[in-house]
Length: 137
Length: 391
Image (cartoon, each protein chain N blue to C red):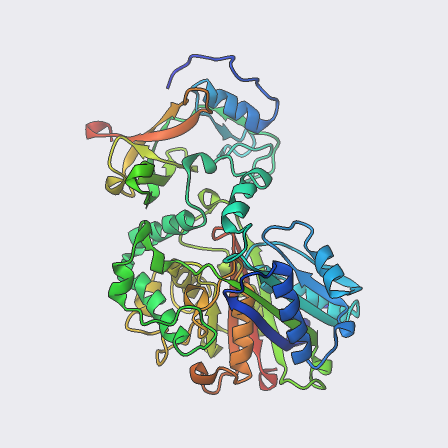
């Protein structure tokens, strides 16, 4: 992940806007509740575990494993098949994402993955994952 | 205070109807709904002027109860338009029973209609507009093909944890088709084999087009009255012995555990209120938007242990002649699915208890379970129904 910041988009004051602004700047953040210490994703204005006020946005380790997987079938002329996964981060939270850099059919539950933020030109930043290979897995 | 157990059997379904199932080109959602409503009220031996309670929901109109009231010419003293997706009309039961028990109203019409198959503003447009009206900013960027991708993700997890196979999933579709072949109202009645399902076009692995529900038009309605009044009406009353609703999440990525649904809570509540258990149930109607649903709900409602749904359905066990009759109308997979199927599961349960199943009738059925699901494994509602001798 990069630490470069951008001012191309306005930074809103709501949780969703701030989280997205961080993504647009290349930073993937989750929440950690100061009261119950549980990790939270997606970010929201109260802890869904204990009800405490807005958990702090923090950087996750970025590593995790594929928890559930599907290949969405699409005609080759429309771009071909693509992966949709649910990834469980090592902090214990899950999110929908995709695993890149390998054929969709090869993405398996349990595959160790690392987060990466992609910011399409003129688009919104989003979290995708790459397989961790070798000893690092 | 009235307890849930005191409400057991206090209300009964006195009339049911379906209308326009399959294809009804040139009709609006409202026209289909109104025709089903008219027939259900007549089936109950009542007139529309007797209806003073209304429950309804729509996948597109957010204030749907108002145009329905207007169209049918009602002045209801009880209105529920709670929208939980496909489980809505089973979720409407408990508040309606409370309204009947309190005397707030005397006859509740529960009704739904959708022309999603043939309408020009159909499912595609509804899905597109929902991106703005009901955003899911943490899932939409990854372009899941919803609702199918959510159920495919759950299926992948079920296969990983329990060794469930695509063949097990196919058993569900084949059983549904075998029942549909006995039901003149079913939309798809051609023969279907395990191999047909396995070789069908893959849409979202591991689910093929044959693991997926139909997209049809259709409407359904039923009338709920107090049990004492139901005894004076022409049809054999079908009593609501127990019912419950549970929601744990909206998005599939927020589901606590992709292989356990909130049906565990809705089912427990329904069985507790009914004072019955799964082995007391003669016929089962489960919301089969996709084949994986049936395995999850058989497990979560207690018909088999968690993880054993695949083994439970093998060898035609839920097909005609099997150990447990499930989705005897052909279900959403082969009979009818106009977007929110739950009301049709309930109506089929009533028809079975009344002995109106024709070639698909389960002999001597006295108890039935109808289960609704909404969203992407998001909302769950269960009803346990029984004839007078089960009270």
